[in-house]
Each structure stands twice: as structure tokens, then as C-alpha cells.
Length: 565
Image (cartoon, rainbow, N blue to C red):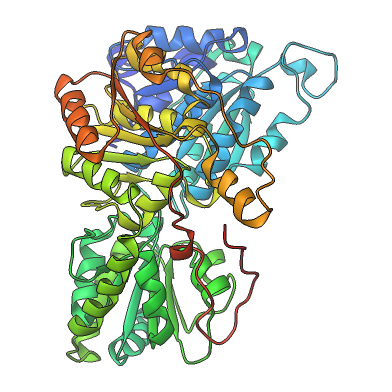
């Protein structure tokens, strides 16, 4: 993102205080901040905003899906792939509510998504008159699922509020934000001044805390590193620290790919659980450390060093032995400089070999899911983007799918929002047009946004969606079979012929019943550089949950342990 002082048209006019509509001021402000795409559905409340976007054509584009949820998910996918703020727009009331699940998911994932929400006429807000799409306290609702929300009341407020929204979304703990604007305010005209944009300085590094962390980690015999989404921009630094300490690096959903999963020190979530039991120091980077602290257990013999840019996160669950507050790459570079004074040479090769052998035996029982994942990985280029849905294949991929780089494995975080996948994949593709994007979804989750095949075709977004079809909400069905005496309810599904369904949109479609056939279909689909669907009929899948919902292995747990599906 390369900020500019003023948008080009204003520079050309040579006006310091141009007169323009609020809508134009918002679009120009987005462009100033490097945002050139709006994922949006039109509606009367936002007509001026769409007209402003039309005026900015050539510098700004609008991608319109078929549902508000998809507009928000597309912005989420684009933000996850780029790490940069992305914007969507919806009408008030039903539009905002339709987009709310995506905003909640973005909040849980720390994604810098900017919501532009329309509003009823300004004089009638919260008056209960019954205006079209009226909802009481919409701004308050948005504040529950965003880091920051504000209302634009006049044209001159727009540039500063957009700048503040972008600042809030991208500094500290990145999260979604929202700006609301009334139907009459969008068209209001006034003098507008665009503020200078300066890159924020990272928080200062606490040298004393760095020395303390280096001592804890450097003196440990069995250090362990756990990474989350907050480490995605610090891959090189994480790898250097890991190699200095010979410390395994464990990741789950958001942190996968911080270092390549093929690296000798990269371990899965399940292998991390085995290492947790005997670890004598932990470095947690940009992770809530939820599973480890609330389920696996902690004790006084396990000093934890937590690195997070959010000071509120540091002491959640339990006060760490050492707190490092700041930007992960900056803090890790300081830690790297200090470690040699406290570190000694250690080897974990034999230990990790045994742990990996045990994990490989467990994975071998996960067929056919692991075979299908191997097929996807074989067909997907190294820089390709894999999006996983809340489905059996998706759960297995959190443990077994090889990830070569940050921001190439997209998983919905702790919300685990069913149906998030296709819109997210479309947004990822729109933001990364030269790369291959594949979505692994189930028949249940895919049908949440299946009409967006039209969006893929309309905007030439060559996402390849693989629909694993077992005719059920498979995870729900298995729980009912195993824990509720096979009393099945609300879990079986009636599906279309997915191949014919895709073809009805003019999309290439394939059917594959084996991993080999899936790999072949994916290679054909990727080669066409066009949207495609692969239908994979499957039966009941083996449960991966015994490798995810793992038992306590240390002194005490601070929270409940979820039941095993």
C-alpha cells in the first residue's frame, strides 16, 4: 500500500479544498490509502456511492456478487491474502445483517476489512419511523463485531474518518472496522480536505524484556515455538529464531505457513501437543494460545514468553513469564540479536523423528481425506492459495496439508463459520489475479454461497471449487451416530447434480471419485484459467478429531475441555 497525499484528480485541479460529494470523498480517500476495489451490492441507500465509484473507473473497480454475505467474505479473502485493508459496501438493515457473519469472522481472524454501511435518512435514524431497511442502533450493532465504527455526517468528515478507519484496521491488533453513512449524506456536497498519510511507527522494543526472554529461551533444553496469525508477516524472523534455538514451530489454522511445513523444525498441531508435555519453555508469537493454555494445561515448570502486539492479549488465561509487546518482526529481530549471549547448542533431531513417525501412523488412518489432500497439493502451484471450508477435508487439512508460504492457507479461525469458503476464495482470487486458488468444501457449506458461481463467471475469477459430497452435514451426522445413539435429525441433505449445476452457469465441471482423478481434474481446471467445479462423491469420512481435541498433559487447565465429536 503506497499512500498518496491527495488523489490524482485533485492534484490535477490544483485545489487544496475541493468541493465534492461525501461519496466521492470516500472513494478518493480509499484510493489514497491504496484500496482500489469495492466488493458491493447496490441499493438505493448507496446510489451516490456507486455513482462515485463509476466516476473513478480506471482507478477503482466494483465487484458485485449476488448476496451481501459474499461481498463481505470477498473483502475478507482479499485481506487475508494481501494482509492489506479491503473494503465492501452494503445497504443498511438486512444488508448489514447479511454481512455480519463475515465481519464476525474477520474480527476473530484479525483481518483488516472495512465495511461501508448505508443508512436511512439522517433525520430519521433511530426514530422508529419504519423507513426502508431501518434497524435500531445499527452503529451499536456494528461496534459489537468491529474494532472501530463511526458515522460520516458531512463531506468534510469523510477523509479523516476513512483515514482513522484504515489506521484502526491496520495498526495494533488488526481487525475489521465500519463506517456508516446516511442516504442523504452520501449526496451532500461540501469542501473537503485530504490529510497527509504517514506510516505508523512500530511500538518501541523493551530491551529489558528482550533480555529476560532470551535467558528463558536460551537456557531451555526443550523450547517450543507456537505461532498464530500475528506471525504471518514475520516468517523469516520466526525461522531464524527457531533455527537458533533448535525449537520446533507448531501451528494450527491461522499460523500455517509462517515457516514452510516442510522445514525440519515445522510440526503440526498434533505433534505440538506431544511436545507441549515436556517443553521447558514456550515462545508464543501472535497467537491466542487458547488450546494450549485452556485445554492442554500449564504449570509453573513451563515458562511462557508471549509476543503480541495487543497488550490485552498478553495476560489472557494466565500471566506469562515474560511479555513482549510489539510488532513481531521487529521484536524477533531484537531477540535474535540477544539470544547468542544466552543460548547453547542443542539437537532435537531424534526426538522429532519419533514424534513424526507416530503422527504419520495416525495420519495413515485418515484415508481417503489425506489422499485427496495430496492430490490437491500436487496440482496446486507452490504459490497457490488453498481455502478450506468447515468440512471433513478441511479439518484434516489443518493437520496434513503442506503449506509453503504465509497467506496461502486460509482457514476461518475460531469462529469456524460454515459456508464462508466460496466468497472468501473469490475475494482471494480477485486480490491475487495471477495465482491459482482452490477451495475444498463440503456439500453443506458450499450451498451457502453456491449462487456465486454466477459471480465467478461474471467477473472471470478462476477459482476452482472442489465439492466433497457425502449428502449430509457430515460432522453433525457422526456426532449424532456416536454420541446420541444414532438418533439422526437435521443432518441429511438433498443436493443438485453439482456438475450440471456448474455447467448451467457456463462453467467447466468435472467429477472425480479417486485422488488420482481429482489431481487430473484440477490440473485441467488450472490450465484453463477459468472458473471450474470438481464434484467428488464420498462416503463417511474417518474422524480427525482425536488429533485435534487433545487431552490435558500438564498440571492444570484454566478452562473447560470440549467434548470429542
